[in-house]
Image (cartoon, rainbow, N blue to C red; front, side, top):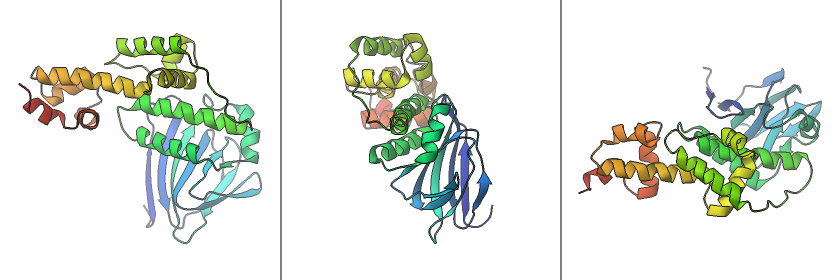
Length: 264
């Protein structure tokens, strides 16, 4: 790889995401090209200038840029030190073709809440085993993007305690194997973003946080039964031992190994 270039790319197991792309470029300039997916872009260092539909745009670090599919664009560094960016490519299930025109007109969105949520989405996408969290965060990001593209403020969501209880029961029944928001939405006949809002509003915790706390509770019991952390991780619903350790320490304050060694 050329000097001044750093690239990481992967395809997570999250519905709607076709690719995650993190890169740092100091001199490289993209020629005009198109994607068949939506390009959701944030810049962490430096800035990018690009042309979209023959109009020049820029991406200072406090904006979120949304480039629609099938519309040619380019890109080059707008600062001497180049730029560092994070991109999520989304398929049409998250944003329909009716939003292409509005996105061409206003691709750069100055929205601190959206910027923070996109950053949180990237963090979740980078952690194997946290797909439900990533899907939850993507649902809220896509909802806010649609609100921007419709050019109207986000409307308040009504409480839906029945739906929240049904989702909780679904999560309780699938603590180990888990369930995607997309599948939960089909079973409960609700949009994924509405599921997240209804659940969070009813219980004060997001669905992915609830599921993870249930898995940690299961892990605690198995550890006190004498099972080693490596054996506990898969039967408690975690991707691997590192995944278990990260969430266990966050919720319990110690690693699974220390917890087990301190048990009676």
